[in-house]
Every structure is written in C-alpha cells, then in structure tokens.
Length: 70
Image (tube, rainbow, N blue to C red; front, side, top):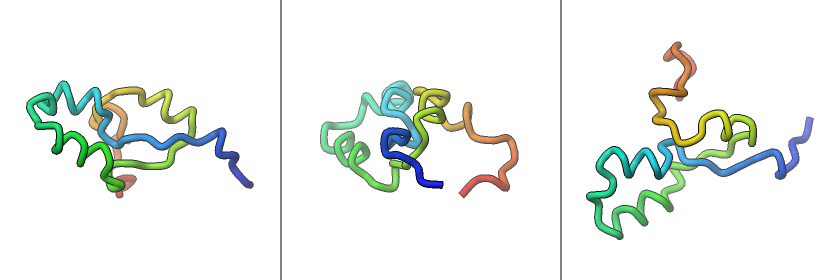
C-alpha cells in the first residue's frame, strides 16, 4: 500500500515546545538551531499520529512496552 505524502508529516521526537519547557529556552541560538535541524531528532510520521502526539513529551506518548522502542 502506498502512502501519500499528504498523509505524512516530518515531526520532532521531542517537540520544540517541550524542549523550551524543559530548559531549552536557556540554550543559545546556535544550540537551538542545531537541535532543530538535526535529522536524528526528526521522524516521518502519519498525520494522525502527529496530531495525537501534539507537543507532548515522549514519556507521555511512547508505548508502555519498551520492546517497541528503537
């Protein structure tokens, strides 16, 4: 089954809002830019999953079973 790019988003594992709340606001501009552009911080996800996750901390949306973690 092919998935349309309209059904996908690029999303941060740790949302920028959560980073800000978790002291990322203390980072300098270059540190924030580096994080925001780090491909290791980004994933392709479905639009539905992205909307369900929102700006939550990963601890709030990761499955309970650690066997699902990468």
